[in-house]
Amino acid sequence: MKIPQPFQYQGSKRALAATILEYLPTGTERLIEPFAGSAAVSIACAARGRGKTFWLNDYNAPLSKLMDKIIHAPEEAAAVYQSLWLNDAETALRRYYQVREEFNRSGNPLLLLYLLARCVKGSVRYNADGLFNQSPDKRRLGARPETMRRNLLSVSAWLRGRTRITGFHYQEVLADCAPEDVVYMDPPYQGVCGERDARYFSGIDFDEFVAALARLNDLNIRFLVSYDGSLGTRAYGKPLPAALDLTRVEIHAGRSAQATLLGRQELTIESLYLSPRLAEELRDSAACQAICTQEFLFV
Ligand SMILES: C[S@@+](CC[C@H](N)C(=O)[O-])C[C@H]1O[C@@H](n2cnc3c(N)ncnc32)[C@H](O)[C@@H]1O
Image (cartoon, rainbow, N blue to C red):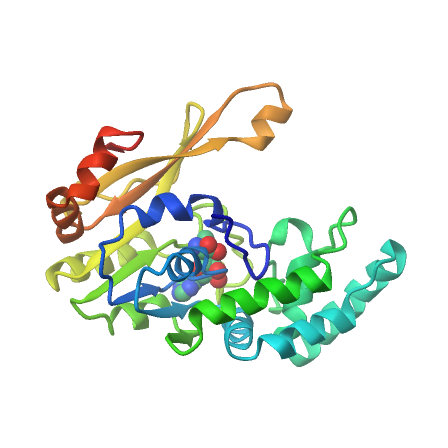
């Protein structure tokens, strides 16, 4: 099942969403994403008819406002995108810089949709003054307006009427979780999130994050965390401590495009950590028995 995304986003879990969903309990009442980004996991969950309600949160305020517009006013979002999109590469380049300037002046989230569709690697970058400064991808024009409109309408149909959208710091979201919730966390990458703007991409403090996970354990709240991993023989990110009693699942994220270009065959493996209560529930369920004997490893 190919699930449309509203926009390209660096670090999106789109390609891994189906695998991550295998570890979600059936009958999930509310799925919470404190670091939602493009919300790939929640979108896949809703599209597959899993999960009753959703809470999407991202500290990047224009991004969470954009998600709100996509879900609650998709026609307006599609119309603004159509009015900005151009077929001619050279004029489109000038348009990109104009839109970027206007976005930095007004903060209009609908302009961010156009910037995300056109910027390098779907990667959000802000300078020290908090201004969006990512360059345009000169090889691409961004999704055609009719494709964009279709994607936005699909995402809206799946999530409208059952999704809360906020722009809080993740700690505020975790403080408001209840035992019937399931929390999926995909924090900014360790060590690679630009240090320039502490509001969005400073990376999160490791010890604070670990303490927050320990509190969720104390409250018996089920959660999953995408965190560290490896690329070929190189590990990236610091593993989460054993004291949290998490179960680490290795997810094969495919071949690294960069390494393939350099003639190497390197596999990317991402860790998905399951909270003790979730791992226990999954071990008891028949579905997990099947998963454990197939391609995924509980380690
Ligand atoms: C790796 S991305 C998430 C990608 C997402 N899983 C997807 O599929 O698109 C991490 C997100 O965390 C957000 N973020 C960074 N610091 C945060 C904080 N302190 N609280 C909440 N969100 C934060 C960033 O804006 C970014 O969108």
